[in-house]
Image (cartoon, each protein chain N blue to C red):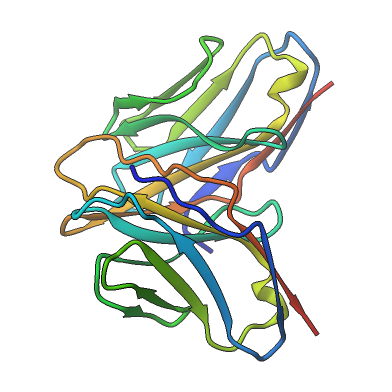
Length: 114
Length: 114
């Protein structure tokens, strides 16, 4: 799986959009970008994933650059409960029974301030 | 609530002892992953089971073992415990959508070895 680079920490004001960047310059053509978050000592929570098109769900939006070497997770209206470590993970698609472990880096600690 | 349950939530034991951690996956999920999260190592993949069979191993110590039962719940056995085994242990179960697999994590078991 391709390695990712994320800033160690970011701050965001409550109610504002939080934009979390991720660099994955060595990503392969069939690798997906996944985002998870972990609120203090809780289990990681799936947020969103995408291949090359921008994706949106009820939690967030994922913007992937055209060359796919970087992406941005957008939380449109951050709340205090969004304070967490956010992990950007790149992994190959499933192809029948192989190991698809998630390789977590250090992530970005997002602190949402009142 | 991810639908993945883990018991116990907390476990305090002494060095040299043996403990068993239990995980119940989401209904219908065949795959179970175990991860360890310690302060200095971050989230690390230990082992994966798929429909009762071991599918992949990560950095799992020989003192650790796991199994998945016919009802798909899984147990992680940790023996000859050492102080350094103190950590959060998470399991995750996964669902497939086409070529994509999304893992959903349980709340974890916090193990403290004294």
